[in-house]
Every structure is written in C-alpha cells, then in structure tokens.
Image 1: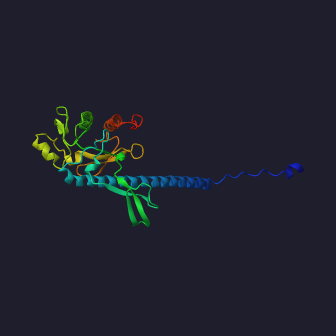
Image 2: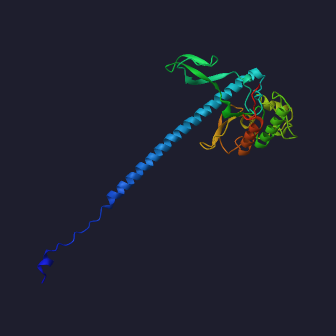
Image 3: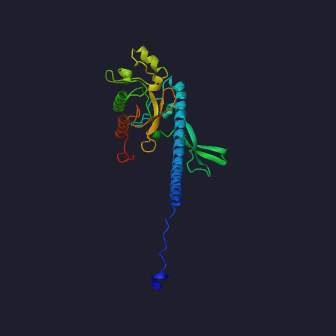
Length: 275
C-alpha cells in the first residue's frame, strides 16, 4: 500500500523531441539564400569583367583600323616603331591622331592647348579629350615574327638597332635563319608581306596563314584578373589569348619585352634636368 506522499508526487513530464523537419528546412533555407547571394555577387563581377573585356577588344579593333589607314601614308607599310628607345609602340607621327571623350568640360581648362570638343554632348557643354590609344596598355611590333624564337631574336635586333642608331623604317638584320620565317632578316610589316617573302625565296611553313600568325599589336597581359589579352594579327581580327599561352602571350616573350623596356628607357633617377 502506498503512502499519501507517494500518491501526491507528480510524475516527471516527458521531454518531447523537437521536430527535425522544421529545423532542417530553416537550415536549408539559409544555405540556399547564402548560395544565391554568392552566385549573384559572382554574376555581377563576372558580368562587369566580361563587359570590360569586350570593351578592350573593341578598342583593339579600332586601333587596328587606325593602323591600316596609315598604310596609305607609308607606302603600304605599317608604321615604324617609336624612335624613342625602349618604347615598343608605333611612331605616332605616322598615324593620324585620334581622341576619345574623357572628363566633362565644366569650365575652361588652365592649359590653352588642351584638346576639347565643345557642344551639347550627353547633356554636357563639352568634354576634354584624351589621346587614343593609351600606349602604356599595348605592345606593337613593326617587323614580322611568327613564333617565340623569332620574337626573342627580334628584340635582340631591336636592341642592336638602338645602339647603332639604325632606322626602324627598313628591315632589320638577323642571324642566319633567325629572321622572319627563317630568313636572314626581319621584314617590315606590309600589306604585301607574303609576296615579298615569296619573291625573296623565303619558305613559309606549310599551312601557315601569315594574316593570322603574325601579331601586329597586343595588350599587355592582365595576369591576375582575367589572365589574358587581346592580340591583333595582320587580318585585324582581335583574338583573345590566355596568359601564359600561345605566342605572343608566352611568359618568356612578355618578360623579355619588359626587361628590354627597363633596360633601354631611362629611369627617373638617371635623368638629370637640363641646366
């Protein structure tokens, strides 16, 4: 027989398990939202990067058109190199000057010779103009090469030409078999390049299309962001080339160009002001 105390002691309450389905749904919901946010952020970045890449490709194409227009002024030859040592860009004197819109013109600039365009443009009274293209973004080759070996030899020929004050208007000498397509010289880029090579008995490798294989102009590679650059061959059709990648986007060739520029361009510390 139980005592009164035992009869009045309540039984402990049962602990009911928390519904797992509801917790799982909340966790999954948070994960889905997190994934969507990451994808959305990636899409914004990817879309912006893609837009910038396309814009750079358009700039490269416009620049190729400028070079072709200059053929008429240079007897069918592409512009020579910039005469300043270490500036692997074309001589701007051989190409018609071009500009692009820069900053809105809210007041007259202090420098009288600033390039301007005045008028109602995009609801502005005018714009200050920037010189196009920005040569710090590009590398230009005024002589024909088709692979890394020829490209490296051309840089040596360039260095020698600078040291001997040789003009870039003409072909540049090369070691026997080390020039354009195995020739003994580096041919100037011309619209009749293939004809000139054939007339001189230079054998063009079978299956090679010089219009696609000879780079004229290319961007300096954007190594970290998109790891590549636009390359404009003689056919004026910009091609996206990864970096490191095929010529001229080989790491060895790009590094050799950078070293040559550093070697030949006077540094600010070595330039002394004229008395």
